[in-house]
Image 1: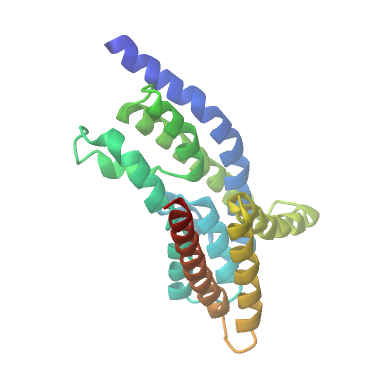
Image 2: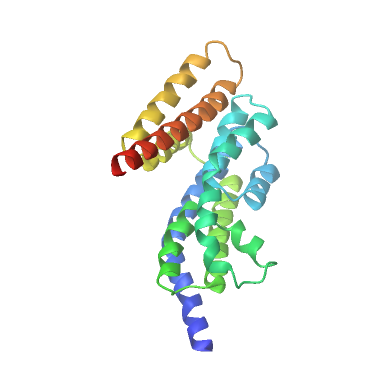
Length: 237
């Protein structure tokens, strides 16, 4: 039994290696951008300690540098991270026999990357809660390490590289959207949301055009998805 547990934990470290290779440089990019956006050293690092959500942190830096309020940042990142509810729900059947006090510590480390790597392990009975704890907190440590290094070196980076990192912020947003597009519905909703954001920007101040468009786009996607499901059932019946 101990051999099985040890093998699972070793496998978690092995599975975490690709995440580490991605999280350290991305965490460093976040730290540098945060410092260049005017966020002081401790808040920049503290955000990585208590949030651990790369996309949300990049978005928060962009919004704060654009003059957004704390409420706008929280609301925007809340909608962005709603997908974690679905990911956690799909993982929950594998933790029914796990002590409840451990669950929050496991849930803390659920990210797009840790989920993508671990879900297959669970379905093939190659992982348990110990696997998740090792995988999640190894990933967390690598993100935090990158963030600290980036925040400390924020003002030591050459100006040319600083400019490219500012572009990396927007390219990451685009990349996140593209990764979510898997069919025509997603493409339609993405284009419609972008169009609504541009339209709302003409009469909404701050970043409210982004928040409102995100909410409207999510609602549109839900309506279209439910409508498509009903039509399929009618044809099947």
